[in-house]
Length: 246
Image 1 (cartoon, rainbow, N blue to C red):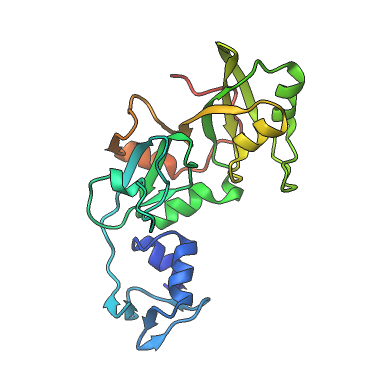
Image 2 (image 1 turned 30 degrees about the horizontal axis):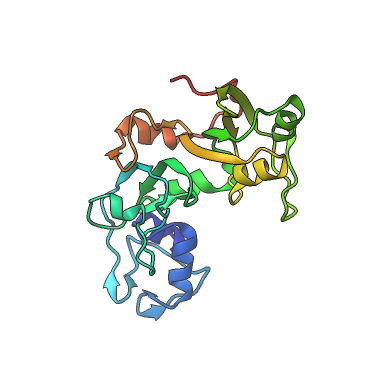
């Protein structure tokens, strides 16, 4: 059965679909002796597919959950020599992060070579939930919380979708919040805090879809179970009644 090349490459572990599109666009893929172009299709069972001159080979699927510490980049490599999430997972082969956590944030980071799952978890149309514990520098009032819940217009003009926000408790002059999003705009929670006068002091992602951080400590990682992988691949629930139970 013919499929688009980026989908075939993603399934074989060459990265997300977007990354695989870049591989094709760069002229690194050949199909039956011809340099492939974006939009081309092939049948892995019938056609000869080469990447950088080597036959397409599917890597064993890897699914890893990492507790990304603060001060670590959510990337595979960084030319400046700063520590990356990939540096923390001592496994051979291709492994890349699904979604991002910014440099100053921490918590659950899924890493895999399953491009199809990565696309499903990050594409906006699937609306997979992401849950965070957020320490803000002040005690929010009802108006500020209502803004987060209804949607905030960010400095770049983007209007955030409604979020679920629960107050966990006060922490000195600040407050711990539990926030559930169904989108992933760049630095969204920090920007929401800045716009509404609630600067974010600490941000920890504790859940992604059905996957929970649990008892992992900063810098630790573990393989996902077969049940966890199967659950991630199911269509997401459309509604959450509150924070995930711990």
